[in-house]
Image (tube, rainbow, N blue to C red; front, side, top):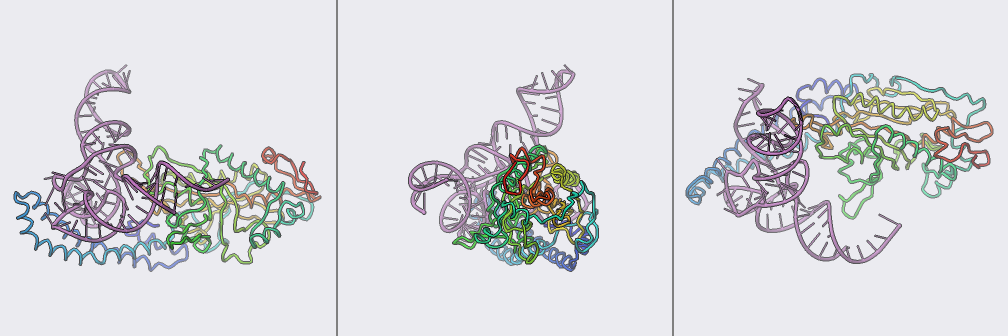
Length: 432
RNA sequence: GGAGAGAUGGCGGAGCGGUUGAACGCGGCGGUCUUGAAAACCGCUGGCCCUUCACGGGGCUCGUGGGUUCGAAUCCCACUCUCUCCUCCA
């Protein structure tokens, strides 16, 4: 949610940002007008209330309270009526303004390049080199099925499309990735969290997901319509909302959290995209990294977070590149986003594997997470960052594609061997 | 699912319906003392909103929403949440 104060002070800045994202700017004047009307109403109500309070105080001070009260009653009755009339439009103003404000995406950072879509994303850096396989690379689903470690057919029987079963060494390799990711997160100072994956509606709203992923989320309706629980589309939701409505001590910042969770997305609107393989699932696992930090350092922290993500692929020996998303491609909550893309030999392309964003104070304002810069200072909103520190399914797929051998077997990247307990998956599905 | 208890500031914990936005303690900040620190002592210390260049002024806020009253943290109603016990369960 944007700061109304900012919109009052720098409406042009808000208009410019909205323009860069390719959305209309009429809302700015609409909100400013509502805000003017609202403030006029507040002033009117409060003047009347002050008058009334003064009368009550006079009663409290009077020697004969009963008599004083009786004498002032008509005047107070009159004021009550005036207060009611003057205050009537207030809740409506608040609602309208909040509703308008809730629909505005975050302001973009100046470093975000112009552009309406991913074609304008800017390459920031790249690491590693795609492997020279010397034979026709297969897509991961073919490798996985041939080895008997990925079973899509039976998963479809259980749950429908966009589900997969990992089996034997496949399941084990996947678990090895999880341990590897979590160990690296711990090494980088993240506190591991095991959060609920089912959260209340208010939590979803607070983290800005109801606008962003509203048609993406699975929900369980209870008997009561308000009694709804959502399956998280990312652990960003519980990790960020954990400190909801808190005022954090400045010396506790930054807080760094890592959580390994399943994630659930309907993938509405992705019909026909990535229908094969493990890239786009209704249920997938990842390790999510979240920072709660200060405005002074949040953009530096975004660099650190992004490096935490890319370091994983360096260790795994998988080529990657970092893209700075253009204005039009940057998500609702984010002021700036880097996508980390890993090389997929079977696809012969880089595919998104982590998305690291600085949401500045945008989510914190909705979530009510603040900190006190100095012991005596007023609380300020924290800045929140999030990014995946290991997408399990996609990385699993990338390992199969980049480490496939001519004979159909797969070599396990060095760093994963201690976790997996084997160094390769042989063509017959055995491990070695 | 059944029964009971409770919700007050960063934390703990008081609070006859009337200058109580809230005693007291802890914590935090500032000061005195000290070479420095500790201890001791003194002072300050919730949040949100409107208004003001500023000083300041005003309003709201004791889980949430209503009600009674000239006046509610204190009385009434509803809701939400938390805790304890029982039941069930990985």
